Image (cartoon, rainbow, N blue to C red; front, side, top):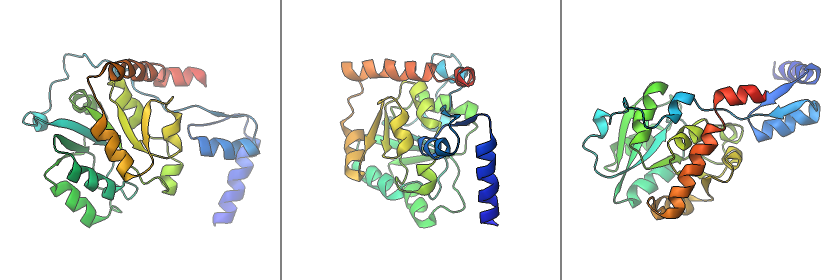
Length: 232
């Protein structure tokens, strides 16, 4: 039962020589039980850092898309804030929300249907991880539109921040713990209006934004899977 599992879990935590976790909330909880606990984040695949690769041709689905692309790569699950994405889709005039990922069985079906049918969204379905760079290369902004107080999200550490950063993409995200572990490089929104304003107001060709692009790529380069393994 759950109490038996919890006891076994705590015993394992206390008896472990070393503990590693990527999440700050889990880190704080484990640290109280075992001082040999360390927080090491997820990483990014080195191949994704080569945004100048010659094989990164524009995907067929994007060839007729002439607007700015706002990409969300991830499962369309019940922890995604669909009201936020629908509000964003209603607001933007010069952009398309690119959705990459499958629809989770527990996702709210009616809201997902409205999102997929919206004139300002483009869904390309599930793509293999190695195919994502082709879509990121031709995107302008990375989106992390999660429900901030969802327990799964509170304890999650999405790898998509680093995947977006590897291509220099500015990231607009909702407010939850993992978003604060990105060295101040993610645009963290406190509500729907703030999220939409962050997206709309981003001046992608400004000097400040070009400097931030370099910092985002450098952050990704410093957090590859091989470097995270070396830190462990």
